[in-house]
Length: 82
Image 1: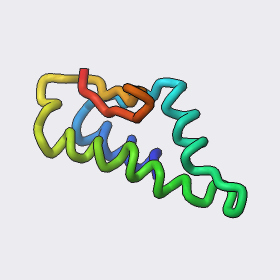
Image 2: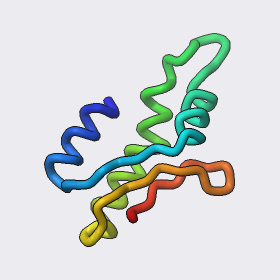
Image 3: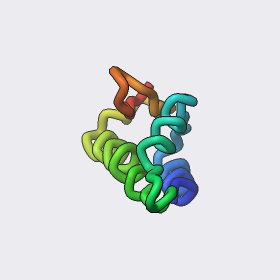
Image 4: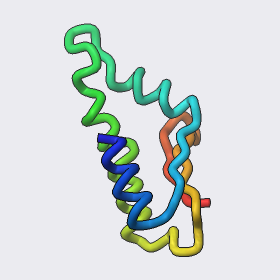
């Protein structure tokens, strides 16, 4: 799913998408459960990365930016344009 999002975003918006290591760890931690393993990973990625990324692009906050960074701010995933 992330590969598809990255491919479409890069072709259409000509931007690079970066993930800080803490984001990857947070996604894995939030998506894992003892009962279901990592089945929840896609939903967590959608809620934590794809929805905020889409909102950022729709709000046109990226028109003069070339990089989007996913990082941790106060323990939560934040998507920002740089």
